[in-house]
Image (cartoon, rainbow, N blue to C red; front, side):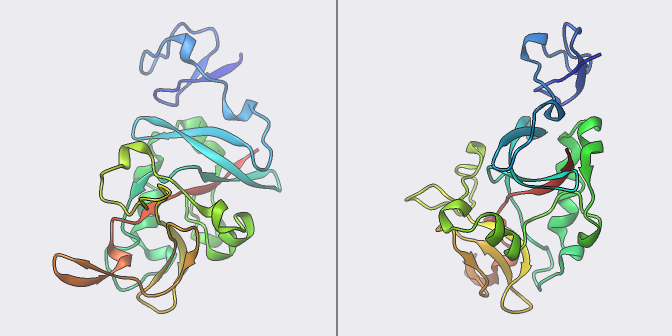
Length: 220
């Protein structure tokens, strides 16, 4: 029996159902599941939900029966690590959030398609590395990212001229207290970013003004 995706809760629903049994969304709003959509590099798909809205992803790569997805928009402003002294990806609080709270909006069927990356401490969701950002998004223009509209006015760093935001990469920066990120011009920054907050200097690693742009591998 063909299954459809409920756009409100991400639940898989029989195509014969009049409404979603989980949330009551009417049948006319059901969507075809991502698995029914042929994936191609550069293509756009919907997969999972966050903050009550379906997530839109760009397909960056297809390899060994898996597709690498990158969220089209920045979804949240988060610290890379609460400690503020620099952290490996395996230990940072951003990784913990992406692989726990962030995934709560995905249906069981969608979660089953996500592939853990053995090289990234078995992460299901992650940030791109510098090398991946350069390989899959080779120009600064391609790396520009705008936040979800609900984040406007939230305090994250957004450029006035192009509406782009800064977003985290998982690679370390130039020293132990810095973290790589893509800035609002689309360039990759690896210096020790310092900001003034409440009259004192703090490392940007603990700023919630830097946005998160998740990536993940899913089964094709």
